[in-house]
Length: 202
Image 1 (cartoon, rainbow, N blue to C red):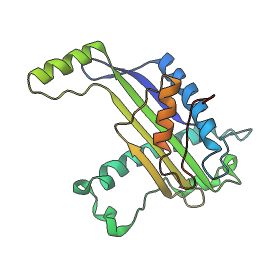
Image 2: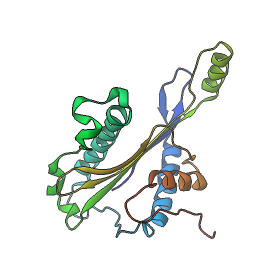
Image 3: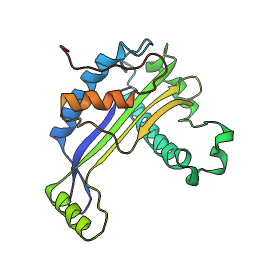
């Protein structure tokens, strides 16, 4: 699916300020890294195209829904103390974005949808200074937010069958090298062959 990508600055007060140039750079770099990795995933991977279906807006909604579900998995299944009663280990891994996705004409012929989302906030100078002052005063202040999700959804049921999610991802997606690193992290453990991502010409 078309990755959902956002990049911006984290202000001194911790607010997210989108940066269009950084986001465009991230989109181009991640797209290039994904294109290189797709042939090595051990599956037939085809980039999403809505063609003449006009389903782009609803597919975008599903992409954002996936990100919300992935965040919920991190919060309520990955951390033992937060697990919901219905999400205990013995209950299995049961998360979904709903069966409605199976009705999308633009996804006909596919078995699974690979959703990817990244969100990066790079600490501003003010934020970094605040972090240093906080450290001197014994107060923890984070500088930078780097979240990534990658997941496979069964298009017949809408069930999430594989997920790789991290709230502290590496790789500066504003650079080609950083995007390569991010994509490799996102696709780690992908069903099939391991993803080997290298820079072109290496």
